[in-house]
Image (cartoon, rainbow over all chains, first blue to last red; front, side, top):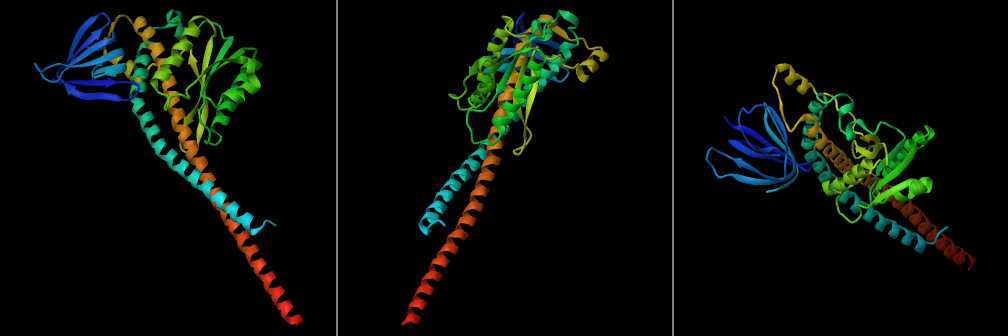
Amino acid sequence: MPLHFELVTPEKLVRSEEVYMVVVPGTEGEFGVLGGHAPLMSTIRDGAVRVFKTEGAQAEEIVVRGGFAEVSAEGLTVLAEHVTD
Amino acid sequence: MASLKELKNRIKSVKSTQKITKAKQMVAAAKLRRAQAAAEAARPYAERLAKVMGSLAGKVRGESGPLLLRGTGSNQRHMLVVVNTDKGLCGGLNANIVKAAKAKARELIAQGKTVEFYLVGRKGRAPIKRDFADRINKHFDTSNVRDPGFEEAETIASELIAMFDQGKFDVAHLVYPQFKSALSQDPTVQQLIPVPRPEETATASATAQAGAVVEYEPDEEAILAELLPRYVRTQLFGALLELAASEQGASMTAMDNATRNAGDLINKLTIQYNRSRQAAITTELIEIIAGAEAL
């Protein structure tokens, strides 16, 4: 079950794609989000969000600052103020 | 009656002015498209943030919320954040923004409140200084950056929030032009701090009814406290984007009018030029004929 992942900054929508898993550096510890994850809202500490396109694939790291993650039925949305690929 | 030579020079100068206004109009049209695209691109973030705030606001009720949401409890000292452009040549845009800001300031003063100004952009400075010279708190300069963006919004927001935390004011209003079309930009006054309690969104209550329990990490209040400054920043960023689009739109319209006026003026001057040329020829002919008859 793929996960719909969106990464949004105030300037633009950076990513909107189907991925396998995303590991998010939450303020209270890292957590991985797979498809069908329970609804969750968490603040993010500055660090790298790791995106796994497919199972076992090489992780792609996106460094975010000032972030916030929301998991809902639609998927994972990361709101970040600054993003460096 | 102006001489032929004078008229000719006049026509030449109006023509070159027309060229300038035409060029400026085309530049504004191109920049407007870019500004609109930027405003468009910023929408998803603002929408999602508003959605999250809406679903959180329902959870945190009463007087317990963070300072930015519940305010200082008093409503005495007001801060007006007025967003203006740095450059002119955009018709009545800045005048309208300043007018709206002054109207709001007068209304607040009439109610016995104190008012201070926080000015962004160069063009609002002089007209507001004329009426409220001693009330200008700070002037934020954006003239050294090409397109004010999120970084500027961040700086302004953090300064405002710092002032709010120090108790320098109770309520902040944001005055900015809302871009409707190239022809109309409405100056808007909007409360910035304390953040107006967001409406509980329909989706939030729908998920609550469906029984889906959202987990919060850390808790609702901590997240809200974290998101509120971000919301203020987004509001300011939005205002800057609206301003950029409005500036280019207003400039385009103003320059279009100027180009058309210059065209009318050239026509009028050309007719006058031709008339006086013909009159000169006629006079000359009469003189020759009269001379020939006298012989």
